Image 1 (cartoon, helix red, strand yellow):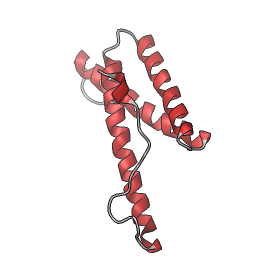
Image 2 (image 1 turned 90 degrees about the horizontal axis):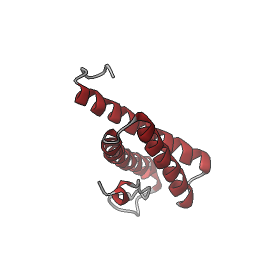
Image 3 (image 1 turned 90 degrees about the vertical axis):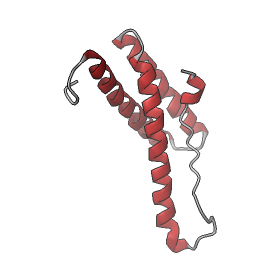
Image 4 (image 1 turned 180 degrees about the vertical axis):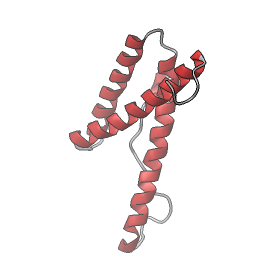
Amino acid sequence: MNLDNSHLHLNVECRGNHHRPAKDTGTIQVMMIEDLTKKIIVWATEIAGYAAQLPSRQARDSYLAERHRELVSGAVTEGVAEGDAVILADVCVNAARRIMTELLAQRAGVPKGRA
């Protein structure tokens, strides 16, 4: 896996007309949240797949910790408040950890949801 492709890009573009009346602000925010959610899912899945291939729990934990630091740093660089950046990174890494756990459980033959 090329790790350069695993960075979560926080730039969320709104689809459609950018000159909507103020009453559509809620719709735009929902679309932005949906776009961010999709990006988190893609990122978490890619990171989980890579982490699951690492040889030990320690290596996986170190890798996920590095991705967390990278996400916080990247989000802050893009203008996100540090507290919000930490929350975003927590969500992303926790999602990756859960997906990774399921991947490892499937590989070991453990039924879903029991890892």
